[in-house]
Each structure stands twice: as structure tokens, then as C-alpha cells.
Image 1 (cartoon, rainbow, N blue to C red):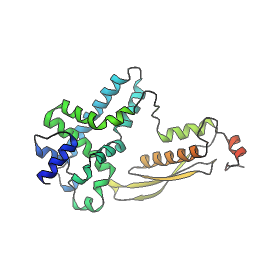
Image 2: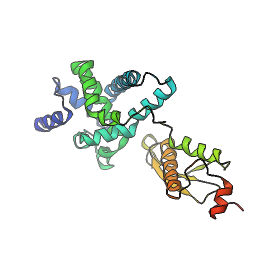
Image 3: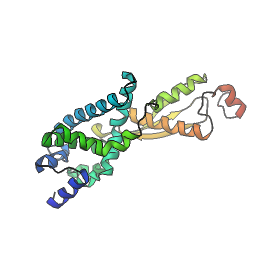
Image 4: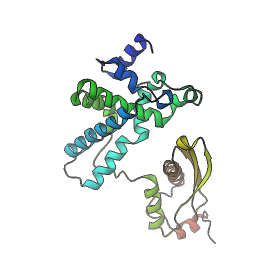
Length: 247
């Protein structure tokens, strides 16, 4: 990677590495060999988790551990990290092996999220915890600012299950409809179907869990559009609307 390209990246990061080799290492995927970002990612993951936990603990003193944990998970999940990576255009700076380049690794959420963590680890080693913390707050602040104590942070599967249970309806059914890719980088396609309502959705994810969550989220969107995503949902109400799968 050229000196000019590294300089451009550091301006986007808002941090100038004293040790340029650390920055290069933080951008190097394992497909380029054993000297890659995985150790920095391990370090950065722990640092990011602590920074977010510390912020939540101070910001929401009234909340119990369970809700704080859900909020932290929402802020440090892969999708959030990948979004930060795209905002920084990290994909165009990744150092990938030929196979990953051909398969579009520069735009894969799993890789982009890893690189954000490896950069945090690299900044910590280069300049210490304070600089790493400033980097996190600079680039995660928009996501922090949308986090409020009023948010329930329940995942889509939990919300959908609770909605069905409150109405006395059958629980959603999740089925894998397709699996693609090599074992360590598989992409799953999962369908979420409702038994009592003619609604279903298929979504993809880098794990079965992620695909299930995404498909549940799509089903919830459909229910919202149909005016059914409320606590009054019941089989009787569905029959009255003429949209029940039941007799």
C-alpha cells in the first residue's frame, strides 16, 4: 500500500499512526498469511467492549445488568462495526489474499467488522488507551447517541415470539432454505413462516442465528404494514379480518 494511500486513510481515521507497520498489520486479512490482524482484532474487541460498557454504566445508572448487556451487544454487534467500516471506506484499504479479493471480501461484514476491532487494538498499542477511546467515541458517537434508556433492545426473534404468544398464536417456524460458501465463511438463507397468518420472509446471514434474526425482522415489518403488530393480535381478530390460515 502506498504512503499516500495510508496517509489518506489516517486522515479518515482521525488518527496518525506512529508505527505504520501496525496500521498495515491491522488491515491485513489472514488470507495473506500468518502475519495478519487476528491478534489485534482480539485485543481491539476487548477494548471496544470495555469502552462501551464503561459508557453505558455511566450514562444509565438506573439500569440493571441485563439491559446494559443487551444495549452493549447492540452497539458492538457485527452489523454496527461493518457500518462504521463503510463510513471510513476501510474496504478499499484492506490487504487481502487473491481468493478473498475475487470473492468480494472487501465488502463482507465479517471482515469489515474485524478490521474495525483490529484498528482499535492497533491504536491502543501505538498510543495507549486514551487514543483508542477517542477513536471509538469519534466514530461510534452517532450509534451511541441513538441509544436511550427507553429502548428495549429485544431482538427481532424475541419480539415476534412474544407477539405470537400474547395472541395465543402458534410460534414462528424457521427453516434453512439454502447454504452457500466454504465452511468457515458460509452464508445461510433462512425462512421465517407464521403458522396462523399467511406471512413469511427469507433473509441471508453469515450465521444461522443472524439469518433467523433478519427474517424475523422482515416478518415484523410485514405485520406492521398489515396493521397487525400490536398486543391485540389474536386468532379471533385474524379470522374477523379474513386473513387467518386457520379454519
